[in-house]
Image 1 (cartoon, rainbow, N blue to C red):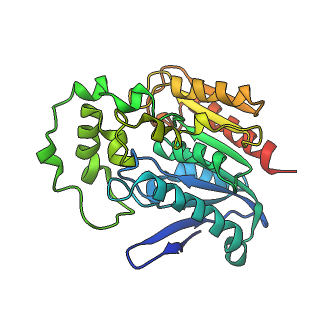
Image 2 (cartoon, helix red, strand yellow; image 1 turned 60 degrees about the vertical axis):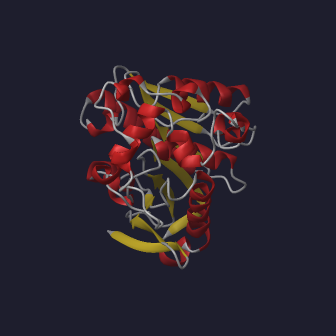
Length: 290
């Protein structure tokens, strides 16, 4: 059963989360953060298969919206994620049968990046799962032109002007915003669009928002999943993140999907994907049941 709640609100925006119940009482919670290059996406992105993967295994699932770039920049987006975790801890148990001490953050792509960023928060989750996320937005893959997207029809700045509004946006479809993402990846302007920081002039300022540079020994245990044929986020982003975690003696594992593409789990019933998802559940059981 799904319950929609408001976890944050002011005069300009309202942020919602969908809580999916499990049959377990005092359940551990998976907080899910959607992808979309930080420019689009919605809490309803999760497929039924993925929802049931968590709830059938005894986990409550809280899928959140957050403010989207470029109307909102990365520091405020991270604040939204932090506020969602605080809401689950303080208000969640009043409405649902959950254990606020057992929270894991799972994210996909840009949501994986935000999930990895929660490991740097003061209020950290018990564990993190990153599906094809990234730990370094200061690196060339993010700040330079993307060769795959440059093979597509070039998008002009003029074509993107109508997409950006003066309003705060917390839900948008890929159809509404993909041209903006395409333009940003073709020109290498994506990082500047989402952070407001020009990486050519002020790369140092970007490092603050790169979890790979802020791993400490109390960073949560982390599971990374990534396909080797990902043309959007390089597989090496997860390789490097795992290395940074291991260097600090943080429990970390990388599940490699051979020839896997971005959003590889859409091929849900593929045996390789099924094995990977079983490992996700095993990882959650290890770190959320005691």
